[in-house]
Image (cartoon, rainbow, N blue to C red; front, top):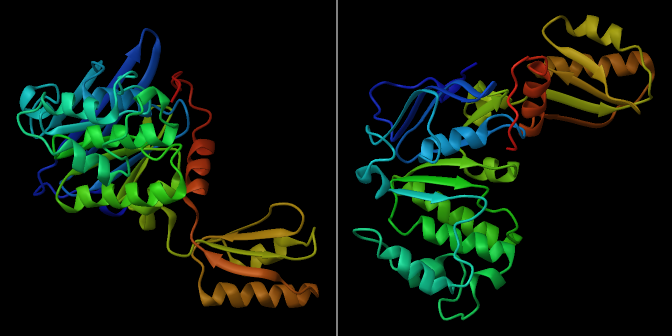
Length: 321
């Protein structure tokens, strides 16, 4: 399913384009027919449960893994070419730091590998690490190591940026600074592919999401398009009410369920008429609804629903992330 801006205009030249990507490990299919693109100035989040195919897709895009079939281009060429690499920044969840080096010395070394680079001191200050600090990378906290890795990824002033769990282990104050810094990269025109299990990062950063399950794209589009503006009405009341009569009142366009302990949920296109019908039904039942709220589906609900809908697929991948 493709929704909203998940349907692209051919007039926009994508920075990263993935077409019919397939990755197989002997008799295991980790990725099957995955296609998406990331445009300049856009942040796209690649989402899915462990085993969905995110790692294999990301590694193929970066050039760490050779796809079985399909096509990947960065800036219109092979992502492993020198011309593409010098314009690309990569921050992986694990690795990427020389343990016995100090942050500034490590970034200064990496900077010499690029034709031009940002200033290491400035980048460390931007991520909240004191450039004069003499602590080695191995002795930094997990959150501090993440910040140093982000600084390293930003050294080439990348036009294409891969971020794998960028805020994992980062405290709340530092996380806000990192989110602002990542958003600033998109604002200057960088295309960003983000993978994360922290859905707050997706809410705060992503222009679009691509949902993977069992190695396939199950949905892609904007958050609003995928989750809906007002897609759920929730309330609590006496447990065990006869919801079949409420379902009949609402019609087939909505779904009524009780999640247990009197937590009732109406899913579908929630309008003022739906609200009026629900409260009238409660009056007929002789109950007062409590905590009556309407909201869009959460991103967590979207991912759970997607996984449940495709749980019977026979060729689900067996990979760690």
